[in-house]
Image (tube, rainbow, N blue to C red; front, side, top):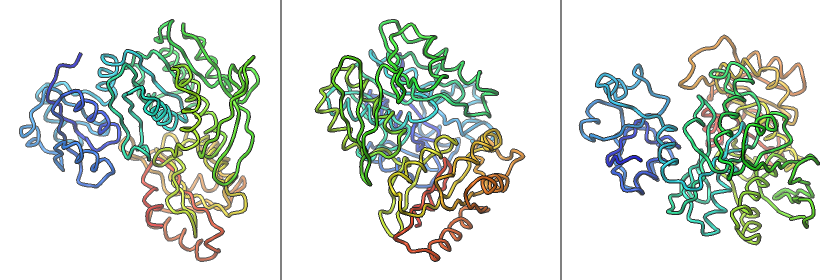
Length: 458
């Protein structure tokens, strides 16, 4: 168990880092940290919690806020951060976010829930957290994005229940010992770390093998890869999905511009009808997974139905930035399947409108490895603008350009054009808006980089 009382975060404004800072502060630790001067939604959270934040990185900060434990964002290394460099020279242990969260989770969660998978984990975690909170389970919850209704991305409770979003990148799942796992989806991703799909799946196989026999795995059985991974657990497995061979079958009923309704079918039980404002078939699966978990924890059905019908989601997950003339929506989708699902959801919700997609590819390695899949993901867009690749802190170059993706998209279906940066993309978008009736347009900014800035400007 961590007995440290003074904890310092390098990159404290990061979504996950701020959530973890909330957890440690609630447990009685003195928390402080540093970050860049740019304003994020987490600034408001940190200010409310009265957590000191030094803007800018310097060795002087470490002397001003001496700590027993140091946690650094994975974006920072000895070569790009003077605080990390100093601590490394001093031989001081630096914990990663996932490593530190894993210690807290394993030591305090007597019923630890991990929601993981290639897609859907953020929305599902946020919904699970909302359900447990409303059902008065007093949970601790950590989500990878701001939950709109919470105005933050973490809840700190005092019960045995912890529910956190588990990121598979860099094998971070190895830090957690879960009791219950929701496995939403499996598809090859993060090619900069996992050389192939087999290696990627191995991370999940090792993870579910740690679920105790008394625990459970709630898994989307529509995917062969998920079923393959599920064979490696000792725990009870509950498969859900659209296919008939699942323990819980999801059957869509109807959809309008604001909601979609579906039913859950379990053998020898009366179907349960649920409504959600979240768009797209993929969100029916997310809601289904959260429902199954909530019923396992004996949350009342009326409470579950009410929360599912009103849950508004998280930031950057089909987030409506502007509701008319034109409609502007921002989404974090950065994998071909996610892009496809986002656009399918938009087309289903706005069947009579013209959809313009602004896509910002995230990392050179992912764009190169999944190029052909990306090229076929924009079927439901009437026009696509592809911005030059966002390399992030992980990569500076990668032998591939968004120009290649534009050519491949145009070879398939959608009219697509290249934008060299955000400024260029905004100008091209404004030109398209001027050529059309604003009331007929839906503009989607899509990607894990900073394309959201265009949505805000629009």
